[in-house]
Image 1: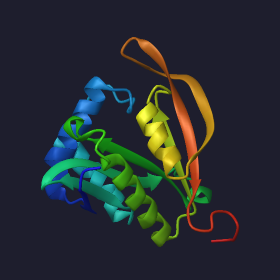
Image 2: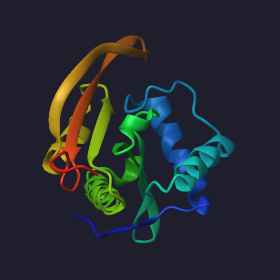
Image 3: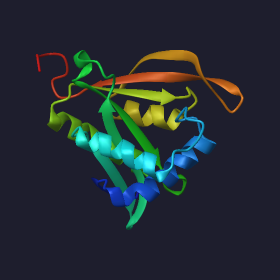
Image 4: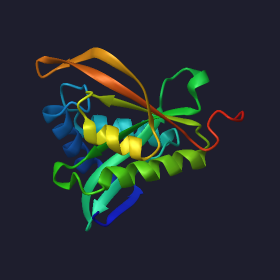
Length: 174
């Protein structure tokens, strides 16, 4: 594994975040967005998460931006307030170098420190084996598939649902 540095993401990272996400939108099925958002929209999204005190992380390898991850509410209704959904995007040149694992590990730690109790991974496309495996390696369990819910690149796509307890999970009240 390459030496990966994880740090809080900042607005200065928006150009790199926008570039990585645009590549994911245009070339992959990890996201079901069809048109890449611009830097203004990515800034709005980051600001909303940071204003809500959610973790937003950046990864670097040798000083170069390699990827990012964040957690946000799984659903907006109040009963879901202790459950977050994770999102991770890696620069194509940094894949298979431990970046995703390092980001997810730190994201889990940050969410536990903040008091969240469950983390949900909604993985676009059941063929996303690397994403499924890194989640499994860090304690997520498969809780279901939602079949044929997205249509991108001329084909129907599933989403894979995985879940992990954070801290004491549901063994105690928050």
